Image 1 (tube, each protein chain N blue to C red):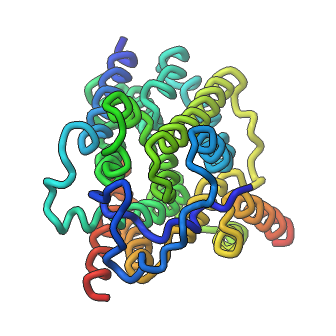
Image 2 (cartoon, chains in turn purple, cyan; image 1 turned 120 degrees about the vertical axis):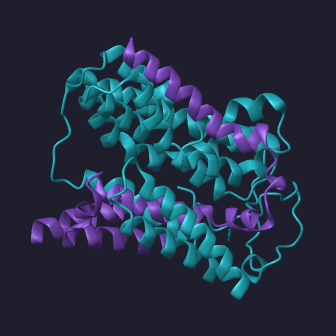
Length: 104
Length: 262
């Protein structure tokens, strides 16, 4: 029962967080500076997720990256820059990681 | 294999109308034209599935690990499996289960999940303009599916036709939701079936690196990304994903400041 209540509470609360500025509060009523900053949430969050996903919940200690990881991420960035394709970027990252991991 | 973000140079103004006025900043003045494909709902479905496919591949290891964690925790398997589609947020799932497994109350677990999901408020605000011209039912239903992936992908899309966007949104959200839930159940049933050491842990950061590269179109967006990553790294030791929230806020503010200075 505890887990079920937690699930219901978390899901209902998360829905309110998600819907707040879409159906409940007009985002145009926010101060101009906030609306301006909202333009840059996308790149800021994307970069932030890169960092948190590398750390795997281990805090800053989790950012001790191997050479294979670094080169894999570089390959992903370069491939995305040249092709604009996420799938090619994913393939380049995994391939580079595997090769460098085997060689090192 | 469609290119993703070439048609979208920067984040649109939240209050942008369906046919937005010329961009006020120089960055957006160089905006490539939207895709030449007619914005029909079927095209939206295809685009949503195509864009979300690599994201979906990337979250499979995460979903299986979540399933294994549920199986090993005090949370009943059925409730744990239900969390994937009902809560629709993997990180919050992990956080809630870890609290419950440590003996926490339902209230504590739910609150922890909400702290982890606090960023969705920001995503909703940033996406509000995409929902403004949508029917009421969509504005009430669609936000349920706001997660990192649906936000990042739809934020990178220039198409503004309401029917196209609805089709795109549900196709993308449906695909990742179905696959994620299936893989969580697989993790519960089959245990740790993913071999280690083959770089699967790199899939999510690699995809977001790629997405980030395609989002950076000028100094303000570059400043936002650098500040977002830097502050998140510095704040990683904060609990419950607050580091990500701090980084996102700092990055968005830095982008706005950089635009005013440029």
